[in-house]
Length: 67
Image 1 (cartoon, rainbow, N blue to C red):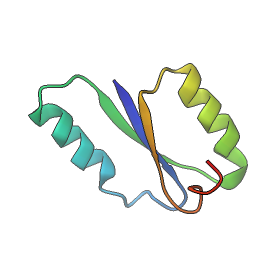
Image 2: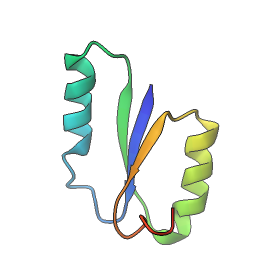
Image 3: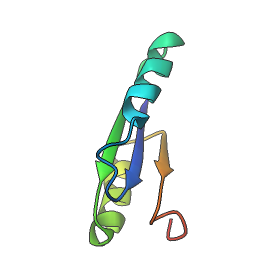
């Protein structure tokens, strides 16, 4: 399972550690990645995640409304 977080200025986010811990706790195989991207990278990143078979993405400010 491939999961991730898309946002801007989110390098400090604890999401990766929290989600990895949850996956491990429940015995699920997967990885959670944080993508700290600029607005101009958003469309390409969404396409990349789709092509790479991501199961789900969390989206944070400022991209929630756009996505």
